[in-house]
Length: 193
Image: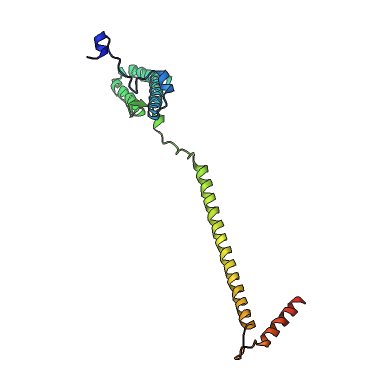
C-alpha cells in the first residue's frame, strides 16, 4: 500500500491534454496542446454560428410568408377539393432550398458555386518568377560576355605568338632574320604617327 492509501486520501488523476485548466493551457508551450485548444475553440465558434444560421432560416419572415400563403391557398382550395395538391407543391418548393451539408442544413444560397479564392501568395510567386527570369537573363548575358572576352583573348594571344615567332626566327647558321625585325620596327613607327 502506498502512503496515500494509508492516509485515506485518494490520489488525484493527472490532467489530460483536453482537460487542462485555462491558466495551464495558456502557459504551457506545447505545440500540440495549443493546436488542439485552438481547434476546439474554432469548432465551438463554428457550431454556434451554424446553429444561429439554422434558427434564423427557420424564423425568417420569407419562410413564414410562404407558409402563410400556402395555408391561405389551402384554405381557399379546400372548398374546390385541390388543397392537398397545393400543400404538397409548397413543401416540394421548400425541400430543395435546404440541402444537407455535412452535419447541418444550409440554405440554397450556400450551395451556389463560389468564385475561386484569390491565391494569397500570387504576388510573391510572380515576384519570385520575375527574379528567376531576371537572374537567368543575367547569367546568359554574363556567359555571352565571358565567351566574347575569351575569343578576343585567344585572338590576341595568337597574334602575339605569330609576331614572336617571326621576330625570333633564325637563319640556318643561328643568326636572327633582320627583315622581320625591320618590318616590325616600321609598323611600330607607322602606328605612332
